[in-house]
Length: 334
Image: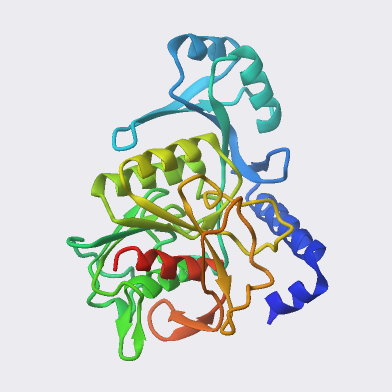
């Protein structure tokens, strides 16, 4: 397969593939995305500020920044302000200007996070039937979940944070590994209820930090035992604070380490303190050569040659740390 061939070619090739992938994502969504100083995709035209005081907002306004939105996430104890970047400025130059103009402000890019492997394109099939989730709750932040026979009896409640939920291959596969149940196929936490927070709405240009925090706020208000996040991105102050707040409310968070090889920069949210970082191993217990790294790795779980649900019907063989993380998350609700 491609991962093995790429891994054999060496870590620089994996890194180059990562750069190419991110560059292509930005190019193909240039109206919505641009890059930060590390080539990571960020939302175009806006920055985010975390609980800014009135004086900082006044100083930002004098420098040409306008308030786009202000959101209070009570379940996380956070207030998030989106600031419109002055016309003609790149996000990079705007962040420097904002920090110079309002030194007391906690601000960052609105980084865009990717699924850690698998397809995110929306699928032309129905969403999994929505049933009120009760009892043992598992949360997931991902793309939407499609209908599938293995998910027919699982209580699945979906909520969209980048528009209406849209079914994706990635979200469907992850959900099936948690609560799927059809004949010999059994998810690792079947019998649980699943809360699905779709942060993409069918667009690869979505999945921003502010969207992920909205999803975390909703999930935290529902008090699941664990939240699986099979997404990767850079360090971001808003996501870091939201993750810490959810952890402070007794919710366990599990995240995948990504598939860009051990030479790639540590990925987040897996690298945040208190987040259970999961890597993948093959059937022989060997680490996947394409598995990324975090500042810590807590568990390894199967991440190769596994079956997972395809949107609509049938199964596919999946590979990657995206699909190892939900198996570890499921162990925390057993």
